[in-house]
Image (cartoon, rainbow, N blue to C red; front, side, top):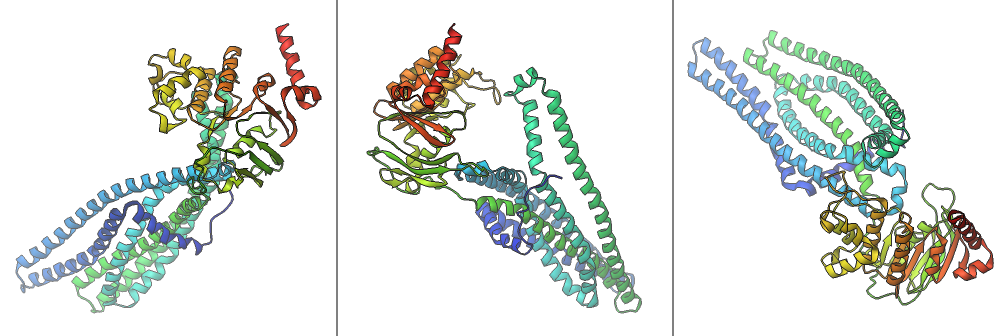
Length: 605
């Protein structure tokens, strides 16, 4: 069986989540929670009322047979019992309606908080596979479990009220009855608790494989991978992998189900023996003349109701405890570090001094080798800088650290003499317009794909038109049936699909649309033809006038627009200078440039 780290807390420690769970229920739906508890507490009195009315009905029937009471009295008690049953059923129906509404509200509350938490956590958090497993478990299980927890809590309140009232009633007949039922029912309930714990542990253990199975299904059914899967004939391999994984997961679940069935039979057998013993004691009281027939009938009903209720209470406690295991995952997720984007020093003015990277190092979570090591450099306001180096040299990591998306493992970044960690992230992010190497393809309109770069200026049509022209995105819009209003993507609607190069133009336009002080382009022309590439770099040079600009590119000829070129290798800065100076030095940059130039000459020849 696949496994994930067992991060569950000890048995008693888990009970600490009961108060925060109650606070969560009240925060999500205070009125619904209170109403749910009140209805359940009232329902707890119905069993005692029904037992009492049943006793009076049978006793009245005995008097009627003996000629000591009119038939009307018997009919009145029969009608009262029927009305109690009808009222009980009506209250159950009302509780179901309240519960359905309550579950909807709770589900929306949990889902929204999970998404907000995911958005507010540091980017490094998403580098851990165990964090994805945790998020998967919370979104898949906790939404339903919180509603179930409410049911278990309210049912427990109802059961406690029922048991307290029946305990007093049973004690009138014999003090040993409640004790016998309590001691006899507990072992079976503990077995059920063991079963629930095994089910929970399997859910945790199978979470990584379930996510992997989902990946296979997405590849087999999704549009984005359809062409390659057919071209390389990967369909059969994916089907085999998904089938093997499904069969293994199914086998593990069936094995657990078989164990659960055996333990359930044992649990039910123990409860049956307890019930028989209690009924035997009751029959003894009747035979010895300690109780009447009417009282005996009421006693039988009370014993059965008490045992069912007591077992139900322990079962609810077991289920509640089991649900706390799932809710624990939710609270663990909520306890993860969060970034308050508005907390910190405000940056209202433009940058007046260089951005200083002071002995900067960064290691990805779980990685053995640092992505950046002891980097020291300055980025001057208005400077154009190009970052070059082989794949994995640390170029993209460097700009993500610079944008504050990652936090340095050691060292610091100084902005106007202030440590970047002390600056409000939202203020700092507003200074950047960025085209990421893996840019997002938003399944919305063309216009929204661009204005997402600066939502505050989405209504500025004049600025939008300027950006469309400078990025080349106006050519994309001109080819579409509804122009800027054309919906893109075919996953969620009958939208238009774009080529890779067209999507890249929209990503560039999105970065240009933002009135950013610092422009960053990470491989901005990788999917463009030579003519479009030349236009991108020409417009980039124009837009970069008066701004700080950082260009990442494997095409070294394009780096000539930069005033300074930084060469990275294995996370370290090995060379810096102008294009001409680096060529003249004959170092790594000159070698890479020579290899590319030779390749271009061969293609031209």
